[in-house]
Length: 393
Ligand SMILES: [Zn+2]
Image (cartoon, rainbow, N blue to C red; front, side):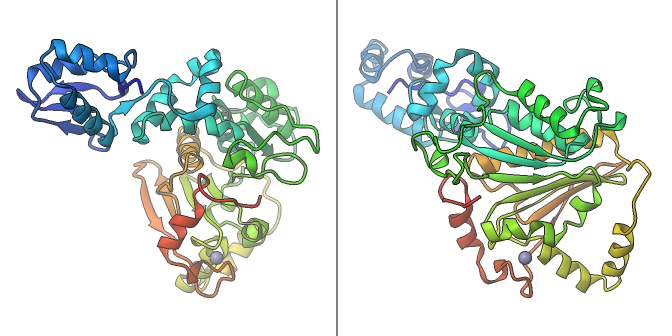
């Protein structure tokens, strides 16, 4: 081990003998009491020294070997230590791809703050390369989500949409002005490729030559040789389908157990969530049943909203669309990294002009055949993180 204090956390003395690591309450830790010699010793924890060398240099500061071992153990337990060599073979492979890692240094630093064990941040960043996400919709929200996921190291991002790019689909971070008139799916594919971290994008694997299974992620191969879908992001150009998700469209994902996340802008409201874990959290069907119970006129209105062809351009504030895309992508990445973000079984909404984000829990409905109502939250958390289980795609 080559202990290194996580550089992502700022360090400050809080009074004379307590050190605070980190600024914000979410990840800040204080450690004390700490004498001056120990404080000086902290400077040595920069990842360049192994434990034996650290003990040796500590003796020059009149610190015993035991003192060093206890301190290193405490720092590790507090999630403050990283190790520039830890994280396993995938993390090591990422370190070898210097150009890719340089692009992702801030992401690696962020993951090091979130995941306490030495090397676990980089291991999770590297694992994204083996994941496959499908984004449905290539408008202002969907295309930007796909670009962010690709630039965050997700190995395969497929975007589905029809028709040709319209001038109002163009957005910074999304489809460029040059794509107007091109097929949306082609333009989105190019966007994903351009956004990808160097060397991270997979070229579609030829059928029947799956890579050797090295990780749980790459072990989840579907028949054709592509990895199974880790996640579907539903980000339709018409935000109504994100705000009122269609149970029929979601049925195949419920059957296959594919997690899916809704995001979009409708009128002047931005929506992120729910992230649906099939059989674990409330789905589009549960949502429809709850809604109809609360508002018996809702299904009648929904039928009117859905009927007929809309010819007007849907309202969509660019700032709100960009915020929704960024937040949805961050929730997706948190899930892909093995966590259950706050959109799990809940929906976040912000409406112009105040943009106050609020969340609504969307529980399972007992009449829905997705089966989520029979489960407890405990079962849900142990059975649905992508890091642990083997979901079919
Ligand atoms: Zn349901």
